[in-house]
Amino acid sequence: MKNIHHGLGIWQIINSNIVTDIIAKSNFDLTLLDLEHGLHSPQSIQDCIFAAKSNSLFTIARIPCKSFQYIVQIIDSGIDAILFPHIETTDQISKIIKETLLPPLGNKSFSPFVTKYNYGNNARDLKENPCIGILIESLIGIKNSEELLSHPNIDFVYFGAYDLSVEIEKPGQIFNDEILKHMSRGYTIKKYKNIIENIRSLMPDASITADAIVAFPGETEQQYQDTLKLISEIGFDQVNTAAYSPRPNTPAAVWSNQLSEEVKKARLQEINDLVEKTARSRNQRYINNIESVLIEGSNPKNSSQIMGRTRTNRLTFVEIPKNINFNFSLGDEIDVKINEARPFSLTGELYL
Image 1 (cartoon, helix red, strand yellow):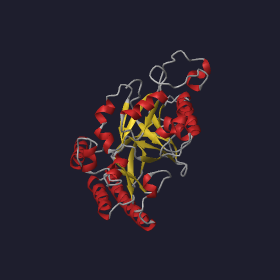
Image 2 (image 1 turned 180 degrees about the vertical axis):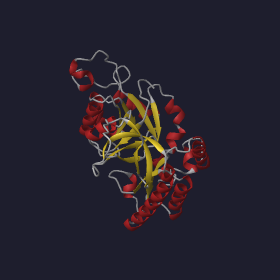
Image 3 (image 1 turned 30 degrees about the vertical axis):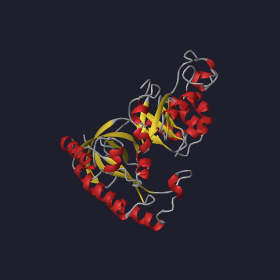
Image 4 (image 1 turned 90 degrees about the vertical axis):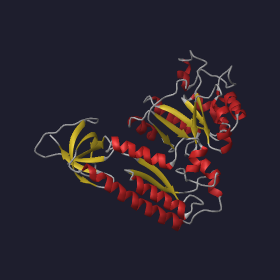
């Protein structure tokens, strides 16, 4: 991929340049600004791009093809890459290239007096274009994927599991062998479990997390129970959970098979209880261990403690003895003996 960035990224749906700044200062390498399902507007994306540039954070914008009218402004704001969803044919790619790339590849207009070119002071490379990515998330797209990926102007590809799960009538069930097969992922749930087992055999303290949405329209009791079973069997260190809520302009928002609020509430509570139980059990392995903790600051709720994170991202509160003069800076690493483990955090004492 030309000029594309490799590293740790995060999907940003919140339309705030402050969030972008936090992402950059949290040592992420890139952020994806979502104009399709996120809360972004063209203006908020521009604000986030400015925040990212001041922190050398690579930016990707997911922009629906129907929003081509915003492309020029977002590119001129200095976006590094654009991801186009729901791509199925090379005709769609041809239109994308025409609208987003400068001549001779496309027909995008050019002005040197924009942010991208430092308002006229840095327009030496007039052929500089953003990286172009496509999101394949349908059976037709997968069928045509070889042709799509061979296009010379496509720099990266992303496979969308959730829309595909809807098309094959298994909504939200992305940990499903049929979906994995359609996506040509080359593995099954069994193989997925084996991979985790292998990781834990080599790195027993490895922290493994996942995301789960419950009560998606049409979710059956069996599908829900399968999710609970998977969480129990794997024993994730943390699972980010949510009950489905309809989003404007999404297909599932108008489906007739919406689950009731009572079912949503009950399922979310049950899965959260399971996640808490699993996390508490996993965290017991830290008791009496000496852990390296990266300092993030003082505990705002307890002035006698500082807080930070272990190498496995466990939030840790550290008691500082009153009889020592302990000076620290953000980003310092200290050794901590863990003496208390809760589901989502640890407490310990400074180990000298």
